[in-house]
Each structure stands twice: as C-alpha cells, then as structure tokens.
Image 1: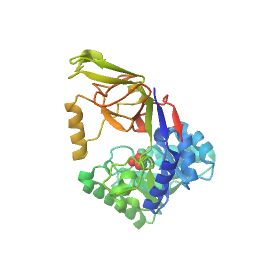
Image 2 (image 1 turned 135 degrees about the vertical axis):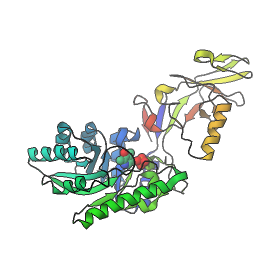
Image 3 (image 1 turned 180 degrees about the horizontal axis):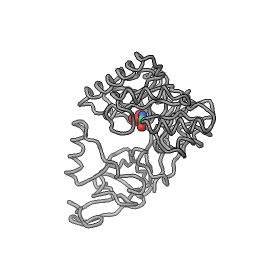
Image 4 (image 1 turned 60 degrees about the horizontal axis):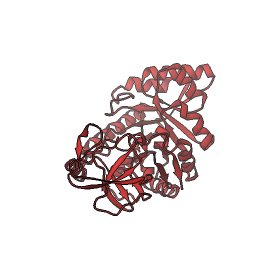
Amino acid sequence: MGKYIINRAAIRHNAAAVQRAAGVPVIAVVKANGYGMGLEWMAATLHECGIRAFAITELSDIAPLQDAVGTDCDILMLRSTALAVEAAAIVGAGCIASVGSAAALGALSDAARAAGTVARAHIKVDVGLGRYGFSPDDLAGLEACFAADDVAIEGIYAHFPGASNLGDLEASRTQLARFVACCEALGARGHKVGTRHMANSPALFNLPEARLDAVRAGSAFLGRVITAADTGLERVGILEAPVIDVKDFPADTPMGYGGAFRTKRATRAAIVPVGTQDGFGVQVKPLSDFHQVLAAGKRWMQKSSETVTIEGRPYPVLGVVDLSLSMVDVTDGEVAPGAVARIDINPLFLSARTPREYC
Ligand SMILES: *Cc1c(COP(=O)(O)O)cnc(C)c1O
C-alpha cells in the first residue's frame, strides 16, 4: 500500500483559477469523499479559498461538511429524492434540495410542512443525461414547483452528459440551449427561476457560454479536466511507494496469475507494493482523443496496463497490476530498492484505506 500525496498549494492555485475562469459564484462539488481527497479537508481548503457553496450527493456527507465549512455556506443536495426520510433530513439540515420530479416535490413539500418551515430548492432539469430531472418539455411539472407553498425555488440546473467530449461539443451546445430556453419559458410565465447553473468543470473550459449564473466544479480543483483549453490548472494527487526489491528474470518467464504475461527478454523487475487494492489499474482510460488511443495502443503492444515513474523516469508495468503488487520493467534503468515509485492515479479511484498525506 502506498500513500497519496496531496499538495495543498496546488488546490489553492486551482481554486483561484477556477473562480477566475468562472467569473460567477462557484459551487464546489465535493461528492465521493471530496473526489477522494477527503471530504472535510477538501471542503475546508476550498472554504479558505473563498468558496461559499458546496454540493454533495449523500445524506451522510451533510454533517461532516457542515462541520468543515460552518453554517454560512449553502449546501446543495444533488440527489433528487422521493423518499420521505431523505427529504426530511435535507430540510432538517437546512440544505438546498434538488427537485427533479413531481414525487420529489411532494416529498419535499410534505417534509417542509411537517417541520413548519419552507424548504429551499433548486429545480433539476434533464437535457440528456437520462437521470433524475424534469424534461424541459414538462412545463406543467416544472410550474408545479413554483406553486408549492412550502418550497422556495432559489435556482434551476441541468447537468452535461458529455462536456468533455471534445469531438462533439455541438451536442453540449444544444443541451445548453434547451436548458436556457426552458428557463426562459418559465420566466415568460411569470416564475422567478433564480440562479441558473449548468457548467461542470469540462464545460467551464470547453463551453464558456455555459457559465450562466453559477458554475458547479469538482474535477477542476484537482486539475483533472479533459479540455484543449489552457486552464493553468495544476494536477493534484500522486501515489507514492518505495521499490521494495529488485529481481532478475530470464526471458520467457510467466509472470502473474494465469501466466498470461511472459517476459520477452531477460528482465529486471522492480517490485512496488501498490496494486488494485489502492485503486491502481482499475480506472478505465478514456479514448476521447488521438493521443489517448495511441497510448492505449502502446500499452496493448507492450501487454502493459500501466506506467510507474521511478526517480523521474517512466517504466511499464509487466503484465497486469496485481491486488497488492506491481512488477515494473526497469531493465533499461538503474533502480535499487528504496527508490521512490510515483503513480498518477485519479483520487476518485483511490482506496479509502490508502493514507492521504497533505503537504
Ligand atoms: C459531479 C457533478 C458535477 C461536477 O463535475 P466535474 O466534472 O467534476 O466538475 C457537477 N454537477 C453535478 C450534478 C455532478 O454530479
């Protein structure tokens, strides 16, 4: 098991860059344990950077998030839920609910009435992701949200299914246009939609016109956005472990479970105690541009799934990554036990057990 190094200064730098690029308030999405960085740490760090609105998907994240950022912040619950217990918890915590269906509106309205309060809510519109949210064509359903006495609509949002798909940003533009038209239709009927937000991190950089009244960003804080734009973001997060031994194998040695991989030549392997239990080798790599296809082709030719950097130099993993170990081909280098191996893995895939080191 390695340790995951998280650079606080890089997060700060990225938070400033995101806020500058947005030019409108930023809602920091800290779902999935703050994208693997640690929910409380991530939220507190972004709060120090001036972020005052956060979004999560899990009810169990509300209390730790409130502890981390205090009560002066808005917390948007991205989950639209028709469950009475969940609606009651969201209202009870003073979060902003997402309303994406008539049933969710009913549950929220009931919960607010029972609590003797008015629930804060943003309407969720589905323009192509195919998850929760009203269809923009469902004007009757959308208008009902404004008619509920116990619910105060403060905003409206939609989510892009493919704003990182650089080959087809036209689809995202069409979705944005549908969302904006939906907001206008509601406005024309006399409803105040409040804060309109649609851009996630890739849209912030790939489709700047999507910024509207607020931006919901998550991956941008980690500097991990698929974009051709010059974002100025720094990549955050690197898994580190020492080489624990170095071993020589003759040519044609089977390696790993099932013997699916065989050394093609006399091979020197560095043993690095990091594997799929850490989240290494589990991420499906996107193939959205030519370079990624090329890199995938190269990995396939080498029958190597991954790359490990040892003392600044990249080396291929021999065969597939094991549960707790990686065998790294260092035949062409000078690597001794104790050398530090570094692996770029997305913290979203990092095991909760892998220790985080904040520096
Ligand atoms: C995860 C999520 C985001 C943030 O997406 P990034 O691409 O990481 O910026 C924004 N909005 C919703 C609804 C999400 O689920």
